[in-house]
View 1 (spheres, one colour):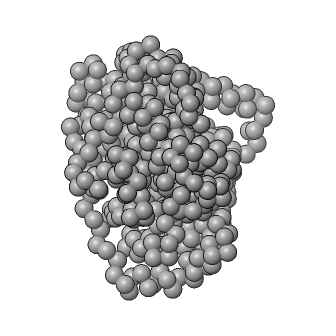
View 2 (cartoon, helix red, strand yellow):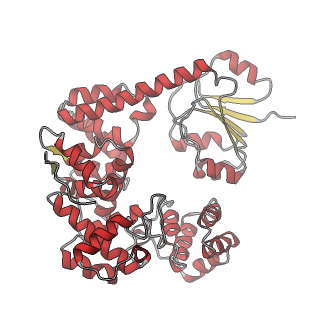
View 3 (cartoon, helix red, strand yellow):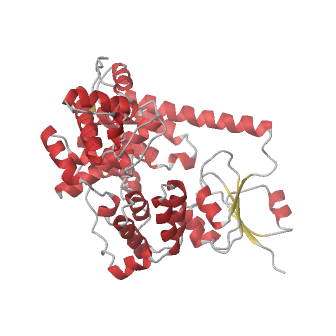
Length: 458
């Protein structure tokens, strides 16, 4: 009887290989090089098990390509490289390294985490100072998996460019320039290219959409959504996508649009890798309601949609754990304040669930904080998430003007830092769609200057 085949993704002691060989047919990465996702997937195609590290991402795409995979054991402790929902859905076990979760290992792991955190903090400190030599040294001292992340790839490129190593910098930018996120857009700027809408995929025909409508998993999902069981509906929908090809994903996204579950449309369309439909990824529903308000305020509708996409993913009845409501996730206290300022009569907080009221109050509040922060979309976006008071404090600590991207990178709250990056990347994509013109994210980021602590907004 043949032994199960397993993959050991990093170099381990020969004694480990010898012991495991009694039970398994082993393929081992004795060179200890970091594999790309495509390389890892190819290695796993005929494997029943994998012994991985934190840089080895096991997600739905990998699982779909490796149907024989039954278990993944992680050498890394506490690193989020397993898509546990996808693994659970496919019945694949995920574990940490057996028999090593001792106090010594925990102490060592914590020390490594602290060392990595210090490196990240050091990098942000050096960025603020404009010390590119120190930025370069700090990033190069990071673990390879961390250094390869888009953020540090971009900033290492900037550090190299500051040393006039333009070719090396450009090589780093090109690694991420095809990605539609914050750092991909910044990389395009550095390469002298602008953000554009990719050529649209062929629109799914009705027979393709009908096939999705007949899918029992998607049907169950919609029934859960109709019962306001969003968690269950989302899991059913995501399960249905696990083996779909690009054309089927686009058809499923279109079916989601027709079924008015736009968050699933976004999620589904974002899974394509070679065909893109930006009307699915960056929808603009309710424009007939929103446009009169944005036009009267002189507010960039691309920015408003960038905020909505991040806040609620277009879930009409979205409710946060702290009480924010609707597409623009307006807090009750904020709604009351804005309603009073604009003279909205007969306002009560339950009206936040009304689409028109939510868009009216959210847009007006965006305009208020934009004016408060001198027209800076960076500061206003951060204030929409963290509150104007905190942004006043961060700005007051500046001793000189900062490049917008550097300020964003050094926002002390990780949630707000990620929020601002996502909103401004969304906004740049929406602007490219609405204006049908190439866009640059750096023009939106601008420069953040030191400011006072005045605050009268909630």
